[in-house]
Image (cartoon, rainbow, N blue to C red):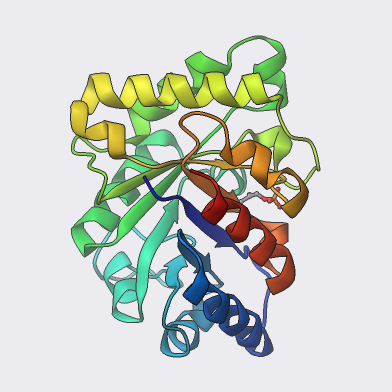
Length: 246
Ligand code: 13P
């Protein structure tokens, strides 16, 4: 299956950075993988208007379609301005915005309702890894935060070890392989054979220098990239590696 590389800009970027998205978009004429950029909400419309090849994603949404929820944005509103992907359950939102597994599940369902694809983030903390709880944490997160209907069209899973985000630390190849293989096994046993085609992304300190190796690991179907997605030259190195990998 072709790889998906998604850039999560978090709360970075201003209107001038649309030029970086345009540079990435031009490069995507020549490559063989799916590429998405998830900028902050105010940039979504312009990013979508000014690109042809890449997809645009948002970083979160409310569970409802509309209502008296000051400061919130619904999945439908995001789709209207061009979002095709919406991140849910990023560890920064689980930690800083008290998003429980149940909230993540409701948000995933809201994304499905809107017609966009949910990128559902899961991953263990350093403490959980040290206590050898990684797989049980992943299992609990998938059991409690995935909707009852998951298909390759409506859902992407992003495995992001919390301790690897923004730290420059990357798990050993075997650790990534084990986590992705476990996630694949869970998906197939829960959702059936179709789940062999649900993309599982790795996220956490992905850079041009380590992308090739990460993309060669079984069941790694792409990457969710934070810091290295903010500069077109850095991100292009990663999408080139994805395009060159089988
Ligand atoms: P970094 O690539 O900066 O480690 O961030 C990963 C991430 O959180 C993507 O969602």
